[in-house]
Length: 174
Length: 178
Image (cartoon, rainbow over all chains, first blue to last red; front, side):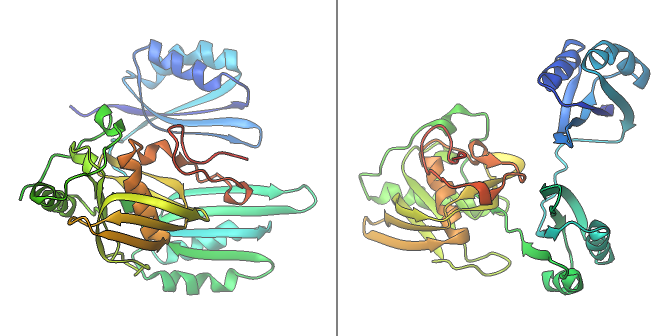
C-alpha cells in the first residue's frame, strides 16, 4: 500500500524544547517521521520533516495547533509524493568562501545548472563579523560531466576575494 | 568459497570487540577467501572487516586501487591483526558501510597513518598510508573495535578549522571540540 506523506514546515524563534515538543505531539497522535532537516537559521529554528500517518492536512493542522501555539511557531503542511530509501550519492563537492557579495549563489548554481549538475544538498552561511561578513557555501551534487569542465566554468567567478573549489567526493564503502 | 551474510545495524554483534588471530592456518585462509568474495559481492565495497560477517577475529581487507580518480594506495591488502602505530592530520570525508545500508555521512579521520599487520601466512607487514587508503584502514579497524562510522558522523557544518584535537579510538567517539 502506498504510504501517504505530508511535508511539515515549522519555523519559530529558537528556544530549548522545540524538537521535543513537536515530535512528542506527533508521536502521541500515532504519526511517524521520515527524513527530516532541523536547523537554526538566523536565530530561528527551522524544521522540515516528512510525516506519515496523517489523514488530511486539516486534521494535522488541527491536532498540532496546541503545541504549535505554545511554542509560538508557524506551521505549513503540504501533501507530497514521497518514499524513503531514495538516497542518491553525490560525486562532486563545490565549496565557495570569501567576501560576501550579491549574486554569488546564483552565479555558482547557474554554472552547475548549465552543466546539468543535480544539487543534493546546499548549505550556506554568513560568518565573519558585521563589518566584514564572509560567505561560506558547500554544495554536494551529482555531475555527469567531468569535474574539470565544471571547474573551468567556475573559474571566472574566482575573483574579488571569492574562492571556489571543486572536489570529487569519493565515498568510502566498507 | 562462499558469500557470507553481512550483519547490519542494529545487530548488537557489530559492537563486539574482535580477538587477535593466533593461528595462521588453512582455516584462516579459507575464511579470508570467503570474506574477499563477500567484499566483491557487496555493492561498491572497497573494504570489509571480519566482524561484519559475524567472525570476531582481527582481519580486514581493503583495496583502494579502483577509485574513479587514482589515489595513493598499496593495492589489494589483507591485514591480519592490524594496528595503527602513528597517525597525524585530519580531514573530513564521506563514508558508507555494508552494515549500514542506504546511509552515508561525513567522518573525520587522520590523513596519514603508519600501520603494522600480518599477512595470511603470519608474515609481518608495515605500511605508511595517506588520504583515502588511510581512511579505509581506520574505518575497517573501527569494526574490529566494535565501532561503526555512524558513531563518528559529523555535520557538514562542522568547522574543521576550529578543531584542534583529534582523538582516535575510545568507545565514546573520536573527535571533540577542544
